[in-house]
Length: 136
Image (cartoon, rainbow, N blue to C red; front, side, top):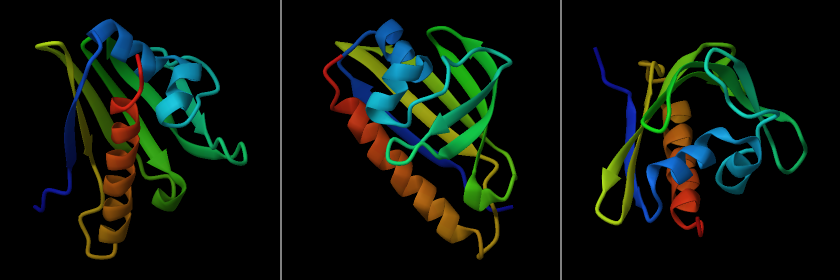
C-alpha cells in the first residue's frame, strides 16, 4: 500500500495555548487558514469558508480534542466528492515556543488522485507558513 499521507511540522514562537486558539477559534482560523462558521468543538461538525466569496472551502467533524495538545478532524474538500480524510494536529513544547505537526491521511492512493494530493500538500505548506508568520 502506498503512503500518501502529508506530514508537516513548523515551529512557532508562541505557547501551545495560543497556538491552540489559532487552530480552534473561528476568527483566528481566518487569520492563517479559512474562517470557521463557529469555534471548533469536540464532536461537532465544522465548516471553513472562503474569505474571497464566502463559499464552503472544507468541512467535516472534529472527532477528538485534547487542549492544548492534540486535535483530529474528519476532513473533505469539494474535489474529494464527499470522501473523508483525517487531519491530525499535534502541539508540543519547544524551546521558545511550540512545535506544531500536521498529519493528513486517508488520501487517494491512485495515480489519478495524485494531483489532489499535490494541491493539498501545497495548500498546507502555504497555510502553515502563514501561521508561522503571524505575530501571536
